[in-house]
Length: 186
Image (tube, rainbow, N blue to C red; front, side, top):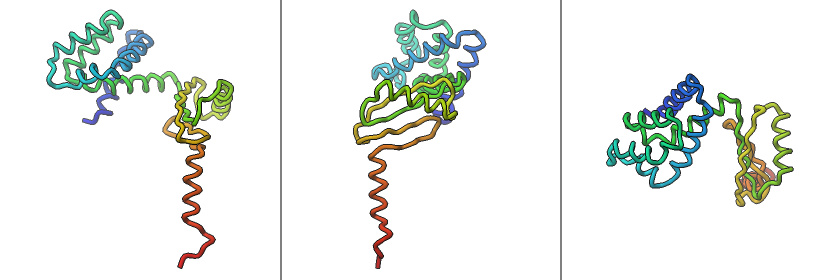
């Protein structure tokens, strides 16, 4: 079974269970904490390791999160470890956050620019996106700086990409020059 399918199913079941118990917001916070924790290389390798015994993994997760997370979250983590699905925990956390945002109608917009954007530019961008009607009213903007763009920006959301960067325009211009329609090829 593919990793995406496993992550989707486990995340969906966790969302359904947390809604049923009225702990969706608490669970969202716990899963964000868990996702951040799995970026630690040692914890990541522990979860992925087939050599480390199940009891040891549960003991480590209890030591790390027992006092910080809800009982439902800890029970869920134990279930994943007992079913030998702990290796998919980072993907499950990512999918849970994605499904939560879809359910709450939150649109995540990633803006990649050549230099940091000012608050005025971000508020103008937010207003234009909201006025266009292509995003929901709940909008999260993530800004990434990539100096290789030279100038301009790239806008990504809902599997769409609008590239208004100088680097992309230069590539397009180079392609046009390579296919020069004014010089006859013999």
